[in-house]
Length: 194
Image (tube, rainbow, N blue to C red; front, top):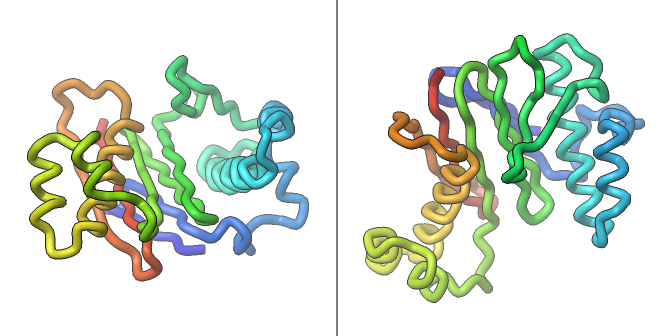
């Protein structure tokens, strides 16, 4: 598991392969809440359920350290739009989750709002077609004129996803970091300081 931080240490980042989470106990499923285990049991794809539970177990383990609560008891709720959040009255912690091609990416921020994204840069994605359809003219031009169109596409796509996960931020000043990992992933971290 890779641990790092960004934005002067305000954002804690965890990145790992979902099957390489040595930091989790053998009974890692018990870190998830009963509601999360129920939700996973109703998923049509066992692979999706596994990723969901591994991600939540890792998140809860990290939040337990920061809050002093037991992992399964940490109240995680969802907004009507589906954004998960920590439902504690006396905390300023925010988090964001992403997963792609067997990798888990978790970000935790104290004081503010956070959005992260992880995208595997596969060679099958029709980047020019998708950029033309979903990107602004400026974003499309950035992809079209890039020396590596695929890399530029995934950097922009990941940034758009991370911004979306921030939710409605109106005129807030958003800090952004985008990058490419050595193993073929684009990632983005966006935050708004409190």
